[in-house]
Each structure stands twice: as structure tokens, then as C-alpha cells.
Amino acid sequence: MDPSTLSEVQDIGLREVWEHEEYDFTPWLADHVDHLATVLGIEIEDVVREDTVGGYTADITAREVNTGARVVIENQFGTTDHDHLGKLLTYAAGTSAEFVIWIAEEFRDEHRSVLEWLNESGPRNTKFFAVKPRVITLDEASERGFEFTTALEPNDWERAVREVSESLTERERAYRAFYVELVDAYAEARPDWNRLKPQPKAWLAFGAGIAGIRFVWSFHRGPEFAAELYIDTQDSERNDEIYGRLEQNRNEINAELGDVIWQHLPEKRACRIKQRTMISGSVEELNEAEKHELMEWGVSTMNEMRQAFGPQLQRI
Image 1 (cartoon, rainbow, N blue to C red):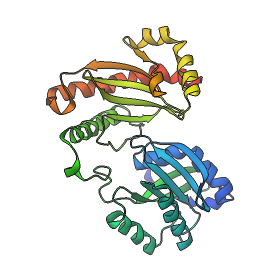
Image 2: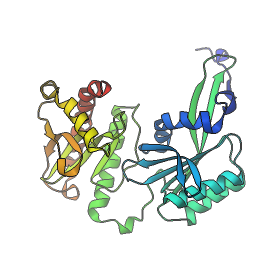
Image 3: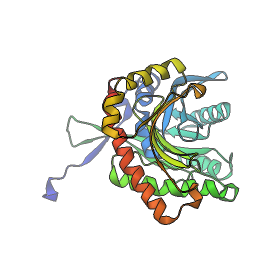
Image 4: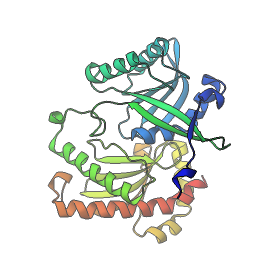
């Protein structure tokens, strides 16, 4: 390619695309929150717009899938100001949020300093992010592109979601170490996948494209390791409906995947469809060869699960 033919990237102000911050941009953001989640390495669901917090309304509140933690998002056009900072902190405190995300086109130095200070000295389990939305075009092209870029995040966010390692049990540390490697392996196999930040838990989940439905890797009693489709919309009737529609194609899915376990789980409200492999012991007892074999199984089986259930879910 001739470098002289490269076009210049031009930034476009958000107001040229969305006329109004509250009535135009916020609804778009709520519908495309997965783009934001991808940049941060988390999974967001149960999105609520204009959620009441005391006498105010937060732009967006939600829940992070793998931790169950509350998420608060405050967005604004232009450059950050004290008014939106105050709102951000009010909503964070009012909802006990652990993920606090401020979206703006530009961040003043003093506001960056506040977020840095909060990440260093604020509530231990709360993580503050500054994120820039960006609309771009090439020269005078009619097509436009959009991206989020992280302007500020907790200092240790790239290593792990903030935890005090000394407080973790041996098993919790083993869970997190295992999923860190599995995330790398799956991201290598599926470069378009949202690379997650693993937690010190027995499972790791990501969205299946429908609220309340997720794909999960999980350790269970047995002991076993499983790749699952987990259904919990927080509405038992809706869970039953989705499970029933999938079960109508049970023979087709079983023929494609092989040994599939269908679990209605009425005592848990949720439903689970899984493939499993038995393991020799709990996660901290596995040797390196066993872990490597388990990760290979996890990558290939999850791919098979997504290929089998993807078309079925699109019809729901």
C-alpha cells in the first residue's frame, strides 16, 4: 500500500451525531453498553436508564455479570465539570456501586486527579473509570466510526480486579489464576471476544446476546468442569419459556454436541444446559498438565456451545 494514499482521521463532536445528551446519547449508550463493557473487560447487564437515586436520576445503572456488583454510568457532552462530578459521586454512594464510570469528551486535570485519588484512597471495592467516546471519519467520507477509549482506570486494573491477595484463600487464588490463562487462550482462539478480567470465583461468565442468558465456564462438585448456557432473567416464567423453546430442539442440539446435560433447576429459579468433563480434584489440586488439558477442553467446548446455541438464541 502506498502510504501517500492514507487519509487523515478527523474527530466529530458528539452533538453532531446525537442532538441531546439525555434524550439521544443516553438511550443509544444503553442499547450499546456492550461496547463500553468490552473496553473495560467486564460484562454488563440489567441496564436501567434514568434510575432514581434519592432525589436524582442516574443516567444508567446496571450490574456486572461476574461479580454481581452495581454499575453507575454518568455521561456528558464536552468537558467534565463539577456538576457532573457531584452527580457521579452521589449516584455511586446512593447505589453502593463498585464500578463507577464517567463518560466525557474531555477530562479536566483536576477531575482526573479526583478519580485517581478515589482509586487510591477511596472505598476499597469501588473502581472509578474515565472513558472518552469518540466519533471519527476519514477526510470528508460520509461513513463514521465510533469507539470508546479509557482515559483513566484503577492502577492495578490490568493485572486484576482490585483485591487484597492476602485475603484470598488458596482455592480463590487458584480459580483466578486458572481463568486468567483460560481468558488468554480463548481470546487467542476468538480475537473478537470480549477479554474479561477474571474474579477469584468458581465461574466465569459472558453474555449470550440476550439479557439474562450467558455462557459460563464453571467448576462444580463431582468434581467437574463445565461449559454452560445459563438462563436467569430474574423472572422464573421467562426462564421457563426460554428453556422450553430451546428444549424443543433438544434432539438436534444433542446430536450436534454429544453429551449434553439439561437442568431445569426449579429450586434455583434458573435453568442450565451444560457439557462437562470430570476432573481429578479441586482446582488448586490440579497439576500443570491437567490444567492445560482442561483449558484446551474449555476453549473447544465453549466454541461448540456457542455454535450450537447461537442460531437457537437468535430465534428467541
